[in-house]
Image (cartoon, rainbow over all chains, first blue to last red; front, side, top):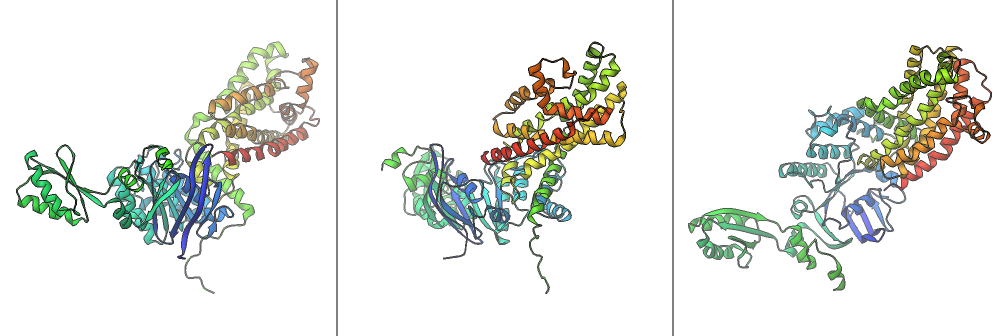
Length: 322
Length: 266
């Protein structure tokens, strides 16, 4: 078996009558990124809290960085970094005071803690705000401070629980760059997300969780093959061009015909990014003006629909009967 | 043998980990106190108001003169203010713990007790402020230490120690109940009889017998008796020993309960 940084088998956890996890297996090879994809309430956060020693599972076992999370939680805590959905920093302290405190709690000496704090503040573009109370930070700044706090001890394994939820798109790509640089630095990352786009951009492998169970595990490309790859959407400028545009789009597609998904917007499944360039050229050659053009991955809803036959939001009852 | 790359920071002996991490976390609560000076009202202005009101309202009625009553009352107000001051740590922890930073503490390789012990130790400053400011207001009103600086200092230190130990009760309540208001609601009816059914305000000789029985075991009676002895030279009896015994009891009973409540929280 490959050298695994995270290995979980049969994790089960209930809160009262709610069964958050119903037997989850996870495996993350060292130095890779696993994207855990699922809607709200799928059990992603519960899994992360178990792996990061914050929760004890009702059943199952988990090994992180070679250490059993149940037998040696202290050893696990020494080698992990955790960034939750909500920033876990002290709002009454400045950014710098937060990082120095966490460095001290990781047994760094006073000077080493200060130096590491300064380094991280610089890296996360917080140097100017370093001596302001975290309460005054914007959402994105808090998130960055939180991530910085989880990286103080150069963790081998980093858990990122929906690190970009609520961030605007530009901040999101900045966060992605940080994740990529972590992996370059040798860390293993487990990232939970509600966006296939995010998992696709960052993860080596994706595990899809629904109602406390793993319903798919594959590479991003493999998963996209299952769920139908990318969709090209086009809005012709003139409504009378719709049918001509549709036939052009059908030619660049994977063989499907173009559907009008919204009033005046055509959508067609395509195999690669190149389809966009080809479509633009062909439409222009035919003199068809376009006011809207986009290429996007299936949304979480669409992924879930392809995998389970029900949408992410709907209740589980119908699935359990089938 | 040469080391090429710096090894991971060697972890200091485990026995010191609790002390070191608690100290770091005590600094955290000091920074918070420093940022919100209004959180010190209960250990500065409130004792001053109590002292002024009680001395000038009751002084003439319950003692020969206001000055006699001031000498008697100041150690009592110190003790009474400790019981009200101890409420704050429970309230603060109750709000603090629902915030994300405690998640991080739990995911860190530090002893579970460290965040709680750090909060209690951080309160040393609050009680030092309480002791100094009460003495300062008292001196302005005419209070005088009748012993020597050494015994006066011992009295102050005993009061601070007692406050820190009593804090564990407040910590337990703060971790057990759901809202900050409930922390106050539970602690108030505990602290009020401690403060009043004691030797804080009057000589307990005039109280009914059943109440005197409570006064005799009331930990605050012993603290105030000890401080009166150390400030004014009144007979110490066994007050210092009883105070220390109560301090030990608070820690032995409430610290493990606090730790248990903390582990259960989420």
